[in-house]
Length: 297
Image (cartoon, rainbow, N blue to C red; front, side, top):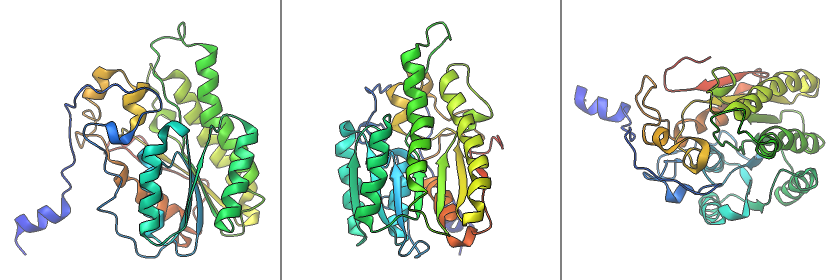
């Protein structure tokens, strides 16, 4: 094989900035992004690493959650996804992709900012999947704000309810279903370790997720349940274009990473597969980072 051919196999030439200005209302749709993110729809190849497993993924309609749902289904898992009703069009695509792999796909729309719904979400997922042994707490809220003076209590509360309270409520409800060998995976962020000045509330929640992960791993270790987190850097998802960043930052998103571009959701899904698989049976209480070479962790 020639050097040039070898390079073409090993190199993935994903889009780099500048990107078009593309504001969206919250929560944003992947289908309306320019370019549309790669969630692994055509590229992810499974190898049976999660055969027979049953997973619940919050925020499974788009972004990282969508990529994880696709990867899990192609690794042999049945998957339930949660999302907001406004994200139904994206979610419908994910359900079709899961079912195309011959796996069971469960759609459970609803707002995770209330404890009652979180409890119902877990109960319904476990019932319709016939059990539950992987929980991915991935749904998140990110809205930039330039100053603590203009950050309202309402926005602060909404960010914490989505990113922290919901994770607590869902995990608390799920532990009664999770058997030995089960895996909980939380989505933190490099913002937990290198916070941006315009993401004061969001960065706090992502740091909280790190502490939650490490503490809960110690609690549940004796039950044989592993708890880990993934800390993404700049990933190309609707979270950014729907108010997570100012539009001028969206247009240059990812340019400061050593790879010179944002990550695509398909590039981080394998971390969630590895953490969920029995191959990682001694890995718990860890935070795995993927940030394009910045080396945040």
